Image 1 (cartoon, rainbow, N blue to C red):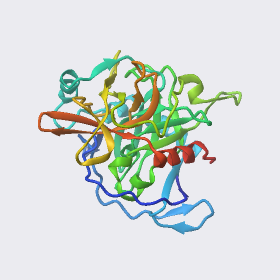
Image 2: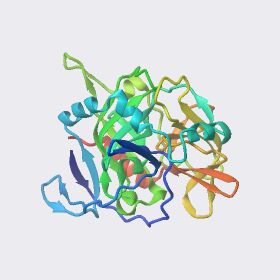
Image 3: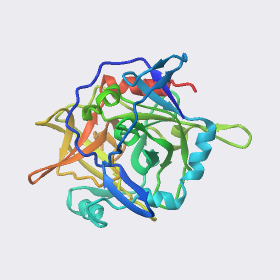
Length: 333
C-alpha cells in the first residue's frame, strides 16, 4: 500500500462527531468478537506520507492510498466467507437490532442492484463493511462510499474488496479490488461530517489472455451530479442491511424530501428513515423516478435520533467531492 499526496486544499471546519452508522465493524480480541457502530481506533500514530515526486510532507495535505497487484491478490484471498460473516456482525445494541430497525423505521427492502455493492475492508485491525456504488466515470472503475469507512483518526483502510449485487451468497459480477482511493479534503483535515465522502478506483479484472474487463461495463453506472442536491427535492437512499447468508432482498431503501436541520449546515436529511449498520456510503439518488435509476447526488453518512424523530443524513455532493472524484478517476498507478 502506498500513500500518495495530491495538492492540498482548504481545511474543513470540524463538526461534532456523530457516531457514523454504517461501518458494521467487528474485531476479534482474545478469541472473542465485539462490534459497534462507528468504532474508533485508539493510539493512531502521526501520518507522514511520500509525495509522488519523492519528497516528504505531513498529514495536512490530502492523501490518496494506492494498492499494488500483489496487494489486490492478497485482499481477494483474505476475504473468506468466514471473515465476511465476522465483518457483518450484529450491532452493539443486540443481535436483533438491525432487523427491528428495518421493520419499524420507514425503510423497505429491495433486491440486489448490479451497481450497488458491499465494500469490505480492514482498518486499524478491525474488519468492517460498508455500502458502495458504481458511478459513471471516464475510467469506468469508480465507486463512491463514505469517507469514514476508509479513513478514521488517521488510520486508513486496507484489504479492500467490492462485491456488486451481493446477496450474502452469490457474486454474479465476481469481486473487485482497489487501485486507489481518496477521501475529501475536509474529512482528511478534520473528519468534517459535512464532507463524509470517498471515491475508490477499482482495478480492472484481467482474463487469462490479458483482456481487461471494466466495472461499469458489467455493472452499469448511474450519472453523477455535483451541483444538484438542494433542500426540497425528492431523494431515494439505498444501503446494505446485515447480510451473512443468502438474502433475496439485502438492500434497504427509503425516500422522501431532503431537508436541512439545526446543527448540520450542509448535509441533508430524510426524516423517519433509520438505516441499519452496514448502509453507510450507500448511494443517494435524485428520485425523478422510483428506484435506483436516477442521478447520484450524494452518499449516506449517519443516523441521528432527536426525540421521536429519526433523521438519516447524507452528504450532498459539491465542489470538494467533485475534486476527490476527479483525482480518483484520473489516477494512474
